[in-house]
Length: 290
Image 1 (tube, rainbow, N blue to C red):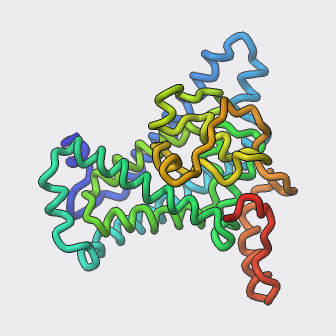
Image 2 (cartoon, helix red, strand yellow):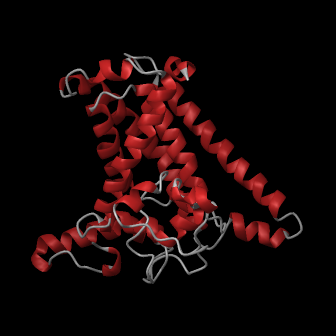
């Protein structure tokens, strides 16, 4: 873990090298999941293609390209600004408290704290005012690991501001914020995968693909449940845990435009415009809004 601390200097960040590493990471993960699909479906070439490139993959791919070419540089600069300015609003003594812990202890605590923050932020995204920018993530009717990339840019921005902002507020070291982001990113790819795994007894501790799939169901009791990303204990603690079995229910939203990239991007602005014009923010997909 000390090596991670060396990767992120405490004062200056080499944005170019960080972005280069991020681009390489995306390429490696896409290749790794393609290789996994080839191994698992080696006797069924058509099945390989459908698993790697399902119906909604075009929108997911465009979201990925938008993130790599536009969002990553912008969010990287935002993160640098937040880090440099955080010393002015950071809680007194917060940094010293983290410095007294071993690196493995820091990372473990940060993973738990970050997941708690993410849990409540995710629930906020399912409220009336934040659902329009989160709905895009739920629109994929062919839920696979690739669906993890289907995110509205404003949803990504919201997550960075809330999650990273609160971690900086409590003085979390920058290397731990990066390490936490990597763990959560790759774990998110796993939980979106189209596999029936419940993790058995371990599912009472960690979020399984089956658990998160219930969160994405089109209709039924799974809606409004399973908001955690890594640790299922948060859903159990707050009464939102629902994993009766492996999930084989249809996923996505029952609405038009679910595979139209530009429509998905523009939809939140249409809704806000309607609200400003006095029509109020509509409660469509109301079964998902708390």
